[in-house]
Image (cartoon, rainbow, N blue to C red):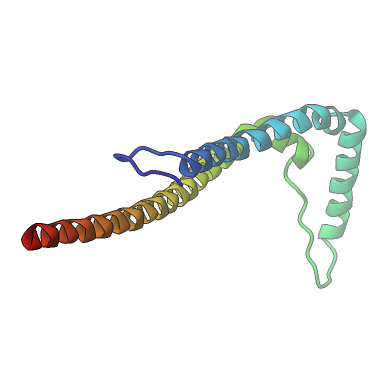
Length: 151
């Protein structure tokens, strides 16, 4: 059984704290690292002349369709480069910062709640054990007092 001793963690509560911290750090670090690794592989493909030619063909097709009447009005994309290239090259660090901030704060908050619940549960168990000990001590004290009175 875990002992709640002066605000320190012990037993299963300490194990839970370690697991939560490890899980939180993994959730914060692994996706950005995977995204950077994927970016390095993908950037060569989207920066190729073939990808640029496909993007230019798409924009030209949008230009042709933009003047037509119909249920959908097409807009020609303003970027001269493929959006994936622009995002991977210029905005990746913004995405990583947003991820670390969101998961860091949300994950840290949820971990703090879980640890607080675990500590409260551990303290309640310790209090129940302490109450049992106090009840037994009270019964022994009452018995000793009765023995002294009756000699």
